[in-house]
Each structure stands twice: as C-alpha cells, then as structure tokens.
Image (tube, rainbow, N blue to C red; front, side):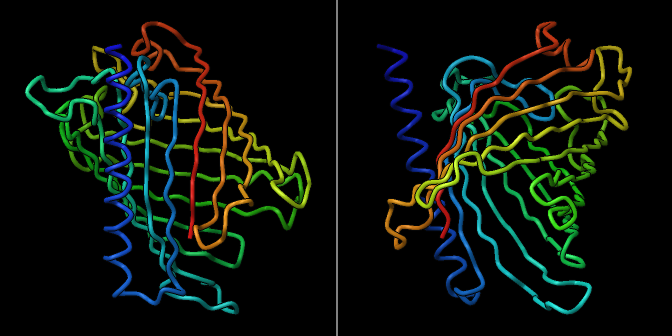
Length: 294
C-alpha cells in the first residue's frame, strides 16, 4: 500500500513536470523562431537501474525519467561544406520512488535529478555531425551538489558507404567544469566511443518494427574512474544493448508523431566502477519508453 502511494505520487509529479515543460518550451520559442524551423520532442522512460557512464546512482524502486527538448534550424546550405547548424535545448529528469539520497526536509524527495542541456550541432559534408554542448544538472531534493560539463561529439553517417550494415559511429569527449563527479577527486575528463547499427525487423506499412544494437565504451582520461585512494583507471565500462522501436501510426498527426521502444542493456564494468556497484561487474538493465515529436 505504501509503495503504491509512492508510485502514484511519482507519476503525478512526472505528469505535472512534463506538462509544464511542454507549455514552457512552446511559449518560449513560438514568438522567437519560425515555427517551420523548430521541432519539439518529449518522452518518458523507465529503467530498472540508473547508471550514467558506468556509474551506479540507483538500483531499487521505480525509476521514471521524463524529458522535453526543442530544436531549431539556425542555418542551412545544401551545397556548402556546412550543410546545417541546429540548436537543441532540453530538460531531463529522474524521479526515484526510493528517494535516493534526498534531504529529509525536502518536500519533493522523489525528484532526484534535473538536467538542462544545450547542443549546437554542425552537419558537415552531409555525413559528419560535429556537436558541442553545455550541460548542467542539480538535485531538486538536495541529494547532491550542482555540476556542469562541456562536451564535444563527432558522429559519422556511414549509411551511404555500408547501406543496411551501417555502424553509425561516434566519438565524444567530456570535461567537468563545475564540481567533480560523485566518484572523482577532481574535475574529470571522459572519452566515449560507440556504434549503433540497426535495421527494420518487421517491414510493414503500418507500425513497422526496428531493432538496433547500440554499443558504447567509456574511458576515464583523468580524475574520472577513481578508487578511494585517488588512483585512476582508464577503462570505465562497456554497454551493449538491444532496442526494439515502433511508431504508433494509429494516432492522428495533429497530436504529433508517437513511438514506443523497449530493450535491454548489458553492462560490463571496470574495476573501479565495479567497486561502486557493490562489487558486481556485470548488470542487465531493462528499459522502455514512450515519445512524441511535432
């Protein structure tokens, strides 16, 4: 009964936050940018455990993570080396029924985290995307101190080269600029490489099903994956996943384009990340979500 009440409160908080965010973004952007050059996306995800870059933050209770973001096209030139420039701003949250690390005096103890992010993306020569981001996060329930990072990411669309066997590789560098991660003793640096191959599993006119196999490997360059004595470990984790996704084409277009997804992540942790996960080096995470774009 108590758990059911907690779950109800979490869902109620999530719905309120999502509604406020959508209204905020629509009202903020509608008068500034041409509506034809701006798109919105919102969604809500469930995860069985909350890991970020191989670091465990919660593995008990109900974990719900809603988000909303807006993207506007700032520049477009089909013939030049810079094909387009996009700006994306968004908010992401994590609500935990277990009230992870919350201040007992807080009135919103299930609201574990809020992230605000801004990405500036450059599409180059139709195949490359170079993006840089400022990312700040804090805890509405006062579970941790505010932090900030700067990131740069390079992605390559190899579909023209490999067709249905495209790997969609990316490389990302991250630098902490305010406070350090919970498990570092300085402002750390992180490097990530990944691929995301996929194909249409069930090819049909209505509600086709796609499958993808994202793989990400994370490395600590400096002061990131540290043990209690402050020693760094370069290898952080490997995350190999399988994700099924399907558009909900029965929904009227005036309500946006809806889709659902579900999958599993198979996570293998390095020695220092393992020590932060109760000594377990291998985890399986279940995930599912619903999203809408318009």
